[in-house]
Image (cartoon, rainbow, N blue to C red; front, side, top):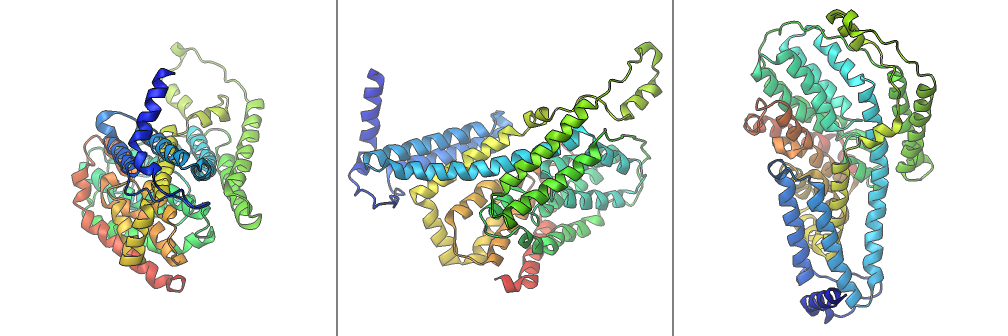
Length: 478
């Protein structure tokens, strides 16, 4: 108790210049950009982001510093507004942020749960085995893995998709590092482009949709620009791919029982979310949670129809039999709550920290000034192009949430432009997206920062081409 009595006056003394500020008008936030709490908040956010960037070096999960920074920022804001006698303003602001995050969290929980269920039912493994067993040439595999990555990432996590395609590339091209490196560059570009034209493709597109800046079907006008973003650099890299055929690899993997039905239920869940949002005018997350019950009931069906396979004594099972057993559809119990437990909680909690940190900086007044400079002085088009370039250095989630918090008065065409650039801009560098970072670890030094940087001019050409295509094809939206 004595400690608390000492700490509170000390903090009050630190923010005492703020206590002298005029009380905010009813429902109006203070401009704290030039005061102690503003500087403290900026320092907390920047320091947290440094730890995020150095995650691979420090082995400190990125969610931890970002969540701590969020707590520091809002605690400091709360002290100021309590001193001003209007604590409800800060409370209402943070409740709105938590509500926004809650909707996105529920949406992502369902989406990732389905992806985990498909992975457990060996759907992705079956795709990989099918490609590996076809005996295709290096150039054919380069294009097929890229095209599949482009389309799969429109409904699946881009990091999962990239790692699946890279597993194919590594399986057939392990003796050709050049092919592996180029295919990884192509995969990173493809998954980022594929996630830009569908609301389910990336967290950034999902945020724009849930904030009602663009309708669900409105995103699909970005399909052709996204294709150009992927195809232009791929066409240039094509000539650097060895014109040869790898040694044939035999790999047989069968999907587990119920795999195809789970794919159908996932598509039905997406349709349900669209109906809830566009027709019933309810949050899309409510439709996604309804879709979660589809797989829950189907999981119950798999559970009650489960049958145990008779065990074969190991001494009677030769090597060929073991391979046959691995290829058989699994009959182990399907537990939906295991899929929920396998969510990427570090990413989801990092997202929580980002939402509250960026929301806090907006509440302090910083994003208002940033918006005024970017969208009033520079103009919407240069600003949105710069957002894409920034996302090559800074994760596109905080960048996009900052833009949404600024809420500039721009046309639908400009909202689509910033969605496109924030999504595909991360392809400019290998560290610009989670997919690139994951593949650098997966390939063990074959695909590196420098091997990606070598092809940055070609990727930048695709970036510019996609923007020009958007202006040309969707001119009526500007």
